Length: 203
Image (cartoon, rainbow, N blue to C red; front, side, top):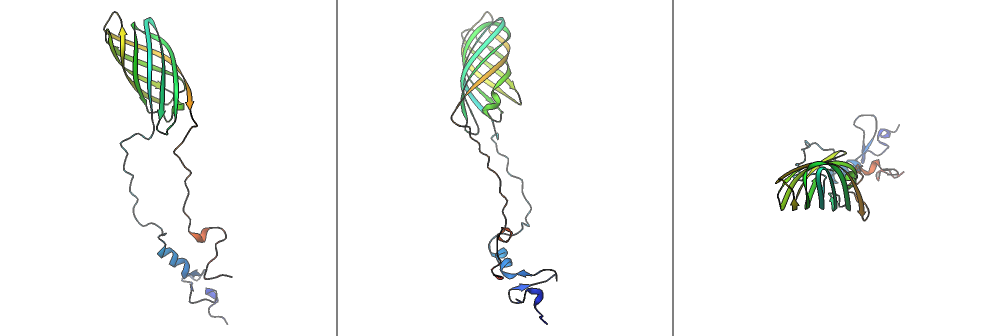
């Protein structure tokens, strides 16, 4: 009779505390010494970042003319939080106070990438100035919103202006699209890898 069959005839390196299967000391030693072990600590929430996870920023030159009906056009350079960049040109039509302006502006949005800015959108602007003009605009598109702060030269019969436009934006990308995401990989101890052999039981 083999009294040690329940531990594979190796009572020095193996044990069977449950009577169901043998466990090698080498595997438990790896568990104890390598740093891999089930976590017993309470997970803590990550510290919120003061910066948005995504967004775009565009520098543009915009010309707008209104006399009841209004038209606007702009050219610009836009980047996003993933490092993508593109040249843009936007045209739109709508209505507004009589006047005309040419302004340099900066537009920031919460769009996930510059590609979200492509296509139709809308702009609502409030501004003023009889020669030196300035304006603040709210921009909207499919799944994003933002604002523009701009200043430049303007003319008009009244010192205050307002306008609304439906716009269409075209992008000319610069370089290849990039992303910051990488596939996640779960850690597995070596004895769960295919083909792993217990050093205490080479056969």
